[in-house]
Amino acid sequence: MFDIKKIRDNPRDFDKNLAKRGLNPNSELLIKIDEENRTAIANAQSLQEERNSKSKLIGEYASSGNVDEANKLKEEVSSLKSKLHDLENKQKEIAERLKLELSILPNLPDEDVPIGDEECNQEIKTVGEKKEFDFEAKEHFDLGENLGLMDFEKASKISGARFVIQQGSLARLERAIANFMLDLHTTEFDYQEVNVPILVRDNALYGTGQLPKFEEDLFKTINDYYLIPTAEVPLTNMTRDSIIDIADLPLRFVAHTPCFRSEAGAAGRDTRGIMRQHQFYKVELVSLTDANNSKNEHERMLSCAEEVLKRLGLNYRVMLLASQDMGFSANKTYDIEVWLPGQRAYREISSCSNCGDFQSRRMNSRYKVDGSTKFIHTLNGSGLAVGRTLIAIMENYQNSDGSISIPDVLQPYMHNNKTL
RNA sequence: GGAAAGGUGGCCGAGUGGUUGAAGGCGCACGCUUGGAAAGCGUGUAUGCGGGUGACCGUAUCGAGGGUUCGAAUCCCUUCCUUUCCGCCA
Image (cartoon, rainbow, N blue to C red; front, top):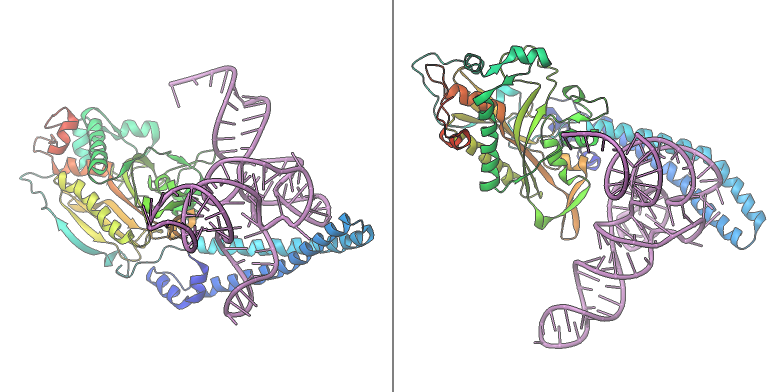
C-alpha cells in the first residue's frame, strides 16, 4: 500500500517504478481521484463546521433560556442535514475508490532488483555440486510409490487431485525435517517458535497483501474464514494495530504450519507428485525490523534458509528475482532453488522477501523511535518448504535399489536409522 | 448453543445528550531542585485529513458500520472482539 502523498509529490518516479513491474502508468488516475477526494472533504468540512458552531450556539441559548433563538437555529441546522449527508456519502465513496485503487497495486522493486520478467532473474550463487548417479535417478513420486510409502490414488479417493497420503517412515521423515528446521532456527538463529491459527479473517489477508486481489488463490470456509496459504499471514500480523518500542526490534518468528492453496492458475503444472499440492507443510520465517535494518535482515534471513540446505548436503542456487517475477508485496526477493536429480532441474524450495513498509501500512504496524512512530519493515521467507525438502532428500539420497538414505542431521530424529 | 458484563489516549481509568479530544493516574519529554541520582515541584505530551510560508485554524476519530437528534463517547440497531456463568465438547 502506498502513501498517496508520495505519489502526488513524485508521480513520474512512481509511474517509472510501475513500469518496472510491467504495469501501465497510474499516477494520473490516482491523483485525479485524490483531488476529487480532497475537494469532497473540503466541501463536507465547511458544512460540518457550520453545523457544529450553530449547534453549540443552540446549547448556549438553551441553557440561558432563549428558546426562540434556539428553535430558529434548530431549523437552520435541520435544513443542512440532507445536503451534508450527501456530501459525506460522496466523499466516502471517493475515498473507498482511492483505497481500492491503491490496495491492488503491487510493491515497487528495490533499486538493486533486475528489471524484466523471469528470464531476467539473476543467479547470485551456487552452493554444492549436482549429485551424480551411476544409475538413472528416479523422481520422488516413483521412489515413494515403489516403497509403498506414498499413495496418490488413495488420497484422491478422499480428497481429489493434488493430495497425497504418506505413511510409515516417510511420514516420519517429513516430521523429522520440520523438527530439524525448527530446532535450527530457534536454537541457532534467534527465531522464536510460534504456534499460530491457520484459519484467519479477511483483515489479516488484506494486511499481508493476498486480499483483495488474490482471493481466487485461497480456500474459504462457509463461515468466512480463510485457510492460510502461508504462515506469513498470521506471523506478520502479530504486530497488527500496535506500536513496538524500537528496542524490542527485530522480532523474529518461526512457525511450522500446513499451507493451503487453490492453485487456481496452475492447471496442468506439476500434476504428478507432491511438488504442487493443495495442502503442504512449510516452516516459515518472519522478521519485523525498523526501517534501517530490513536490508541486513533480508541477507541474514536468506543465510538462515541456506543453512538448512547446507546441513542437509543439498546442492542449490540462489536467484535474485527480477521485477516482474516478484510476489505482490515484495520489494526484493531471493529464491533458493534446490537441485532435483530425478527431475534434472533446479526447483524453488524457499523464497525470502523484503516487503519494506508495504504490509505494515496495510496492517498499521508501527514502531516508536525518538518519540515518533514509523511503519515497521516486514520480511518473510521459507525456511524451508517441508514437502519440497522431502522431494529433494528423496531424489538426492536415493540408492540404486530404490531405498533412500537418511541425511546425517536427520538421523537423530529417525531412531538413528540410516535408510528408509 | 443459552445468559450476562464489557471494549475510551502509549498504558490504566473517569465520564449516560450540550464549548469533552475527552477528568485523574502511570509512562514519556523538558525545566527547576541535587555534588550526583532518586524523590519532589513545574510545564508539556494522540492520530488522520483539509487549509495556511508560518504561529495556527478547521474537521474527523472513545472497537467497526449504520441510525435517532439542532447536537452522540453517552440513546437505538447491526457487527467484530474480550470476559464470566451454564450446556456441549477435542
